[in-house]
Length: 192
Image (cartoon, rainbow, N blue to C red; front, side, top):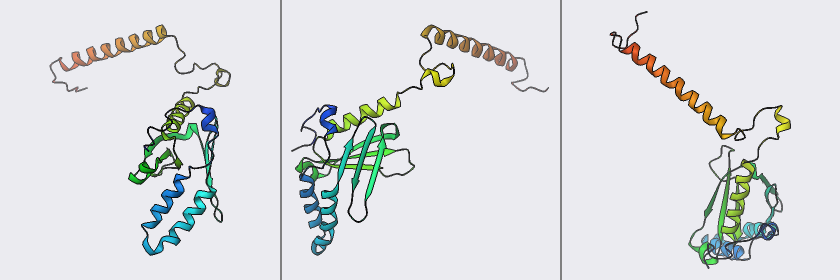
């Protein structure tokens, strides 16, 4: 089943309860391990433990992911740190109804900071992450902490228009002066 079709809209409460990958991910790991041929068991064992220890946590502040037995790895991302979100899937993942959500931050790395895999509600989760990411970027600094400074976007539109008109008038005056200098007969060269 195509992951784009399955459960197109989930509420934030339904997303907050997602903790484990779907069982189809284990099927994907088995199929991916078969590609290794005789090394099948050596590839499958780490993937088996990855699947069984993988946990997600979605909250109002961000998303976290952890996995591992001997070497435990945990990634915590706040929505304000998220720069971009990509949705990818190969043929087998689409056949199983899965996709990967790659979350990138401004860490300087070309690869994704976090890859959420084994989720069947990928479109709903991606949309949830995008909306939270945009909401985190739109937060403004409280007025009390700026000591009287005007927050961006809070100036009345008439004040902004007035400042823009003044800037245009100033630029026109500068252009007029420059045109007079270049038309003064010295070909635009100023000899002191």
